[in-house]
Length: 219
Image (tube, rainbow, N blue to C red; front, side):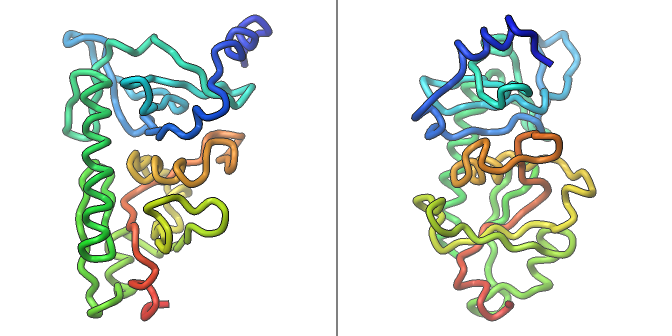
């Protein structure tokens, strides 16, 4: 809980207006450390990397539900799975590259797997033009839930696509998928949806991003 003084300070530093247009990468699935001699520690749940002015570390205030810029972690190194990054700039460069690979793979086969490790894998439909149910369940390791980007929230590059995820992933407390969560915020900015107790909504586990045309024969 923030004090009145802290809340006032956060309000003064809060990001407003067009700031929500800058892509956000959740850091909850990553680890961080201030220097090489320190132990790796889990990143706070409400910490994000924002693609603006180089690379900003931003946090979400639990009381105001607003983002604010923090310099507390500027000199930290980060780790996603077995991948290490010397600083936030190298981490952002990786996220940018992987995001480009997502759209490239999507255009190649119509389906792409976004792994918890940060890997991006083009998936070739097993049924000539459509993914099979078994193929999708294997990719997300369980029963599937299909979410179609639609209506006014449709973002450029995600039109006529759907996100296929494990329907029980959050109940099973699977780790946050940083790349998939970034896409989620691209369509649904923070505050549109909330998780438990008002926490920022996230996408968890391995997921598929699929052209809707690759789902028709398996619906």
